[in-house]
Image (cartoon, rainbow over all chains, first blue to last red; front, side):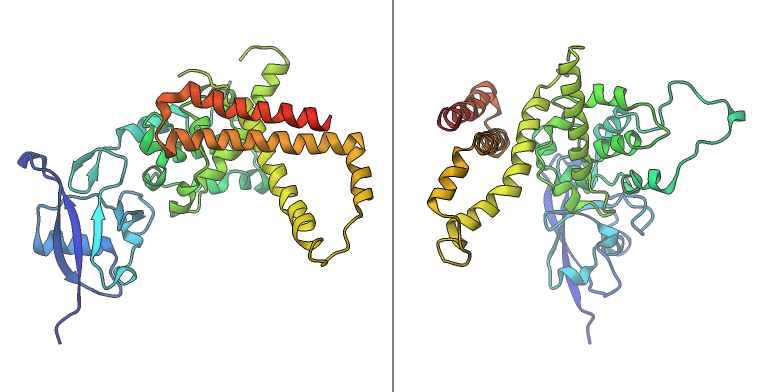
Length: 247
Length: 113
């Protein structure tokens, strides 16, 4: 009996051809243990070596194989073919990002936004080594631990309609990462991050659509992180308003 | 990047959303469904009238109504901006939405306080 197959429709864009992007269909074996990334690897290895896409770990850790599958941003290493049977399965590059080639997107904007939120432990003065390590209780860790699970896969940016409309928006992952450090008891960068993010391109651009948290493969809940950040931002604003330190 | 005064409007929006979500469904259920259908024995007209005459009740009712208006204003403003792609009418929309909430609050204050 012939092996069952499923059709994968991949959006191809080859800038050297100067042509508009168009879908190209490939039939691949419909195996119960295959994910969409396996199907793309099969296409690349056996059908069409010109197909370009990013991937690395194949286990939901590296965050590089995010693509749009049937219009939804997902990690292709976690998207089983059988879930989409009988198909066809439509595979496109992550929405809201410029496309370099086929399924490869240009992510400099995202990387710049990550850097902008200072995603590291900021200290006013470095503690001398001889004073020992920073202590942190499990309760203090649990304040921000879920936000540390982000793998920078950018699915939340593709899911976020605000980022699609306003490319200047810092975006879900960067703001959740800012909160990850704001809530870390070793960090002292809260004021600096607030000055950078309590504005029209930071937390106040978020309109709480919530799609980022739906799309997140690691249950980071960026939407929740941003709402907590807004509460802190509003408290800060009222404090400065009342004490007349100026906005 | 310019500083935002959204913190102010968001506080009213958030307060209105929280209060409305907590109290309005319960009030609507009690006074528009459960009491008319006889599921619960509601207070008499005289009792309700007495309760509403109390200054504290009026202040609470004003807060609930006014913050509900601001909740609507902030949400509707972004619905127009993003949903209908009217961001170029930034100032006009803000004036209409928040102005509407302020006007509604003034009417509520006139009636209740």
